[in-house]
Length: 417
Ligand code: PLP
Image (cartoon, rainbow, N blue to C red; front, side):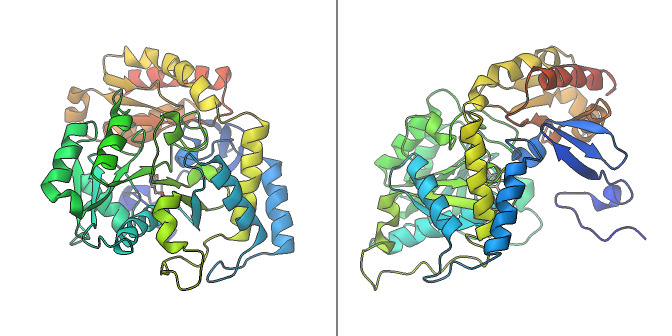
């Protein structure tokens, strides 16, 4: 009898009997159940930004469990770690005075952002402003609204009708965004969702000037700019939130993953004071955001996040994402020259993708998965993504780990055919 565990985004017919069991982790490495060591070049799922196995997290989580193991945030309840975390995130936020809505994962805060965008306009006398624009290849989680705003068609197929009021524009075109706002009508568009660097859609870097111009267009038409920084934040792009690498003012910023380095599920949505204003009137009787989940602001998750922020500060990890972007691109130069490779996308933040050539993909659409296996045989974990493989190593990785990557990918490519 196979194990009943059902994996996300998995062909269970293939996975059953072929599971890859990770049993422990330390720094940039993890070990499988056969005791073999791997460089975790994906930081698990873009999130183990400080690597694995930091005792500070264990201590903070244990201390919090001993003091207050759980309590909810509904109504007037609060807990000390949630209050401290909100203050700390708000003080770091790209928009001063941002409010902080806590949840359990990236998809939660994406759906929260859709609701807050729409509710903001309901409470500012523009209830027709409900339409949400996303980008082709955008990924915003797998909840209802996040699936609808995402721009990877296959992720929305086979689930019946999607929520209405969503459309998509080419990920790299500001004129397309403006044209779509005008087509729908500026008085009907609530928000534009944008990853600073598209992650799960294939590591697609924004063209020079794109983000500044997109924010400008949104501002001109009264459309909220939501920066989905679930991957980009906490050092991945070399800044606290990712979007703050550019001199722009987002209306909302989603974060999760690196917020706790993935150690405990937690997410935070930063909401600019202007967007939050209808709900913070300063006196009782303000509109109530009837939204939130049981584990919002879980004290243990918040304690893990506070310890995580300490690690980032103490070890100077936030700027590493920028310092390491060129070394990562250099490490992939060998792959870029390989005849089976169409393109290497790297050089902005500590993440990259190696895209296979059209001929390789035409001959075998499963080639990215095969390449992942072959790289794994070389002792390195990468992720199959669209037309190739992606990497987003821990920010504690150094020369030794980048050398492993530089050797592993060409070696695996040479065994692909
Ligand atoms: N937004 C972005 C940009 C993401 O990359 C992801 C996950 O990879 C999500 C949202 C969804 O986060 P979660 O998987 O925690 O729901």
